[in-house]
Image (cartoon, rainbow, N blue to C red; front, side, top):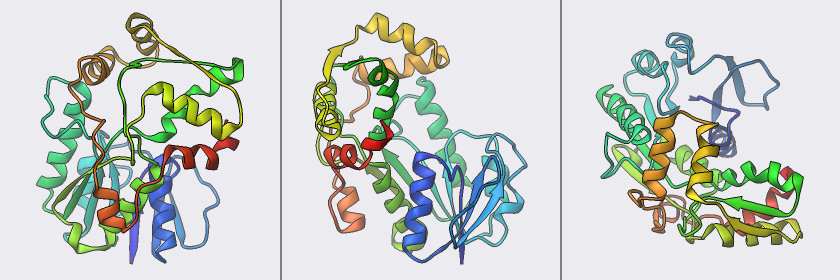
Length: 272
């Protein structure tokens, strides 16, 4: 049987692909351009922003890993075999979240579309990813100081590899159908602690500096739409999102604890 993995070159899609291959499964992998794939992977050139471009890729698959918020979502769901499993990468902001929040809204709309499709589903609702630390690289290239917003907010960051492993389990095993899984790492860390842990992983002396809300807002407005900036400030400055809670889900699904940020930092030191 074959599983369709969208965004297969991304942090999470790539982790799902790898986890499925490690389980001996065949994968149909979607990327925007052609590339060399490992044995067991059939490459499909397609774009999640193309509403009709992935319908053919859905033919005959046993399940699909899907990302929230893309125009291709509805047509892809319609094209799936009736019993194909859908694992959606959603957000921890959905349970109890407000539809006035732009980020929560698009994840919630995707969850509703998946449920309405009639296919067996599993929702993954993770905390912030450990790979978000890669966004610090320009600062690290420029010096040893890392300036970050929301300095007083601890987050139980999750390793994308754990999300990928849970997604693979949910695609393969019927026991995960009609379940919504909150996902976290093993400990909640303040930004200052995250920087200290990365410094140890890089064997480098780093200095953390808190970023003011005004500066953070200006920087974020240069990178994303204003309603998304408002959404993240609601999550972290106004505390409408809890990413501090450590959930047992990864261990319950995989039979092992989630990976630590320290381990992730050591394994990914070369990316900095």
